[in-house]
Length: 114
Image (tube, rainbow, N blue to C red; front, side, top):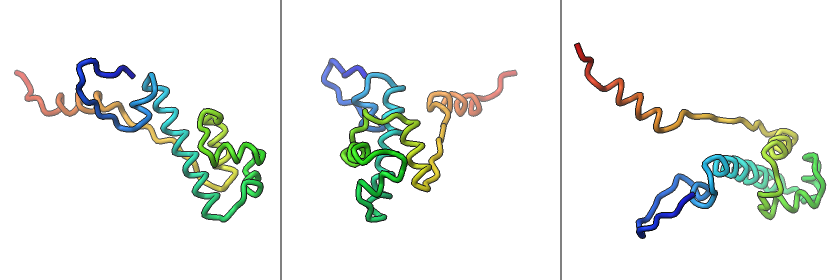
């Protein structure tokens, strides 16, 4: 993402929007980080060791990578597979772009011309 040149502060929906180069990369990182945090939380709640957690279909060293937050080492597919194997129900939520939503609202609010 391009940083402001004139010293103005920008605000972002997430840290990924601020640090990734494209909206696509930010979206992927946002979902991957959410899955990694959820998996880590399940492992901790269950009191599992990394070796126990390897039952999620990966090796203990991969579980170590997960627990340490090494996000670049995991694809979205791998994280979804791990979550499903752990008994979680991963889902994908898609929303319409905000600019389209605003445009539709403006169109609906505009008075009809005769």
